[in-house]
Length: 304
Length: 325
Image (cartoon, rainbow over all chains, first blue to last red):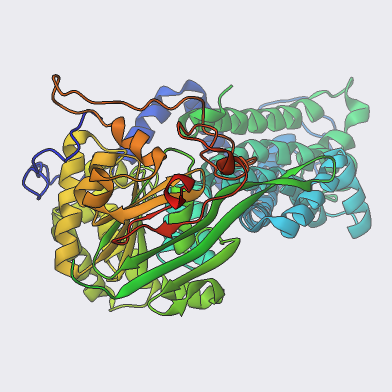
């Protein structure tokens, strides 16, 4: 500062007011939307996800066949005008089963991911903010969970709880908790060093309120991105458990279960496996593209 | 300032940060950020604290609000010992002591509006109902020279100077007696600095505030302070009335510091005291007087005995062996 030992002549105290009473509170949202449209992967991903979502919601209502309707006369029939994706070994319409399967996969993905986000974020928040022994305890639990390969741990959990779609969902939620927990913890550790958190403490705010009004809103963006990416992982894991017979039970039209049910016909009637397989692939692709796109928009720092 | 009532009394304040190392994270040393600092603040005055980066002046400020838990020492505010207060009582006490932060960009939550930031302290301390709080917020905005529509805006829509005004309005909201301002203008442009300083002076008169004003800029401190304390490496080396300190510095460090202030007269003949070496690490401060490694007048006693902080007449305190002779 090139100043005198006394301050320069004081200017009139009131701040020069700029005449721009226009409120620009929405500009951030606007900006976000524009960069969303610019990101190809986000738009394509969102498109795929939207289509799958629509299929899951209204698809089953438009079908001519029920997913469990058996046509004994046409078993393992090739795709035709009547059965678009052919029929499986029991004569069920593969198209109807794939469409109904979308419901199951999205359902499992949604609840498993929300479950792990809620539990993981809460644990991460506590570990990051309070630190000390609580941090050590929670972080070690995460480490233990991460020490097992995810799907192996899921198999163990389902084996304990008994095979069913609901238990598979719990298992997937549990194995994904550390992902969100560690992410949240690292965000909280960074955000709690910010001056505005100190300022909140200085005005006499209670810890719980600081956590939920100051730290959480400034930490959730990477969680949302990770949540979208993990949705894809959860769909695969659900299919994996279904394939192993630990997830959905017959006659539920779960994609992974459909693959395992018909794997002996892969050469004679490949349509029984190709279509559920493609369904899994597109769902995973859609959520991955959307997640990558969201990451670029919301959190440019995470880009590598 | 004629008021002589003491509002804040800090005695032998110490803040050590442990250094952990080794396999088991054992404590292997400490950083002595603040090491035995004492001063008083009278009601209605502004006490300036100057010193270079890392000398512990911010830590001292934060310790007053117990944002940093002091390692030892006593902090008495309005005859109440703050260091003994329970968490909940300290939380309530923060209504009386507020803080203005250095970085106006970091000290406001980017996701909350300016109005929400100002209303927050009122909510926290349960003052007024919703409507009263909103009115108060608008009033505070105009007090600090902003318009009421600014309350709807987010921090990124303001300039640095405007943000600092919001920070000041937030501190004023609960009508505190004492405001600790931690380098409130050092992040601002020079032209904006004087505006904010004048605002703070106006508010002081208007609301009968007492300031602890922390800064590294000697001219800023001279402008706003009634008394000035100089810190070096975690300790206070000199404390006196402003004019006394600037005109008759006693401590060699203060003398060197003041000689570095530029004089806007190119023909002025002045002697600059250039210190050699760097500030020692607060993790391993020198024996005796912490300044002896760089002091131009160092004596044998300085290397062994830590000088005490004595009154050398007219409430001019200093810690130096040269003066003790």
